[in-house]
Amino acid sequence: MSLVRVHNFSISLDGYGTGEGQSLDAPFGHAGGRLHSWFFGTRTFRRMQGEEGGSTGVDDAIARTWADGIGAEIMGRNKFGPQRGPWQDEDWRGWWGPNPPFHTPVFVLTHHPRPSVEMDGGTVFHFLDASPEEALRRAREAAGGLDVRIGGGPSSVRAFLAADLVDHLHVVVVPVLLGRGERLWDGLEGLEQRFRTEAVSSPSGVTHLTFTRP
Amino acid sequence: MSLVRVHNFSISLDGYGTGEGQSLDAPFGHAGGRLHSWFFGTRTFRRMQGEEGGSTGVDDAIARTWADGIGAEIMGRNKFGPQRGPWQDEDWRGWWGPNPPFHTPVFVLTHHPRPSVEMDGGTVFHFLDASPEEALRRAREAAGGLDVRIGGGPSSVRAFLAADLVDHLHVVVVPVLLGRGERLWDGLEGLEQRFRTEAVSSPSGVTHLTFTRP
Image 1 (cartoon, rainbow over the protein chains, first blue to last red):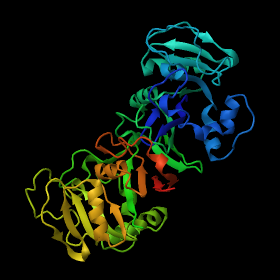
Image 2 (image 1 turned 60 degrees about the vertical axis):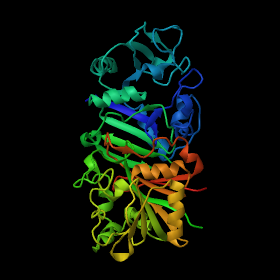
Image 3 (image 1 turned 30 degrees about the vertical axis):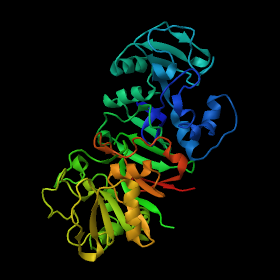
């Protein structure tokens, strides 16, 4: 059965999945790299950058499961880029350079569809104005029986959780207080009752939470 | 040196230190016992109830440090009782029966002072309309060189954190989403920069966070 999965989704102690003030130079706004510094040193992240080396401890062991068995990703438009409203610049092809780390179809949720963009390495960006259910139907068609990853940002993950479409949620709680930005947990009272939860802290200072179906 | 300490302060994953709708029958509102179920089974909690037995694992080892070296507590009025505004009923002597577990002077912050109340076992409730700084000065006088505990609720802990008066903060993150209530972390952006933080998850499913002075 094709599952819907969220991996390596980092939030601050006060629940923000991204900071305030996203821009070309600051994909996570005033959060900078603070939500993901636990990740940058891992072998998984290095490989996503086409580099060698990196740590292979607890953080890496958990992080590296993100790509296994994934046939498509769905992401919100703000994960794809900093533009808002009608596209001023269709040359924008995401933050990830010519060979993005996804290597699958990627469905970008936006109220402003535009033609699909084929990248190196198997990543194809499609642009959809669709509900979570409809986007998932399209992603599952493209995934060929494999799982679908919800890649973020916070409002996209939240929308799929609210619609009870997520089967595996991995959240990384980072011991910083951002104070402002976009929250993951709003409007999800009682979410844990639909899942089995586990928590494990890592020597890096973060805590890995998993929500899986009982 | 007399330190200011917070212990066993439980919050939900979405940051609520208490639920919505406190009443005589529901000290933590709609949260019920969910924020503290990790604590109820410990030997520390049993002893606070005058009972024997209880677990002696990780949760208990961390929880039991709460009373050691404490000479006074400061608490908010909503921790003391469910009444709001001018006291309708000065017979109310807290939730804890004739012999409360504090065994020290306890300063209750309220805009409606009333005469002090002496309980069995050394607990004396004093009622203060004071700033955090002034309340701490009074509590330190009463503590005789020992430490002062900030007992909660969320808005009291937050006020002392905002005033940078806390030296040791122990927060327990419980994997539930309350959705509403009173948040601990609001307005504390960057708090972690003044502390050394540690996180350790426990087999009960909670994560213990400590913020200590570097």
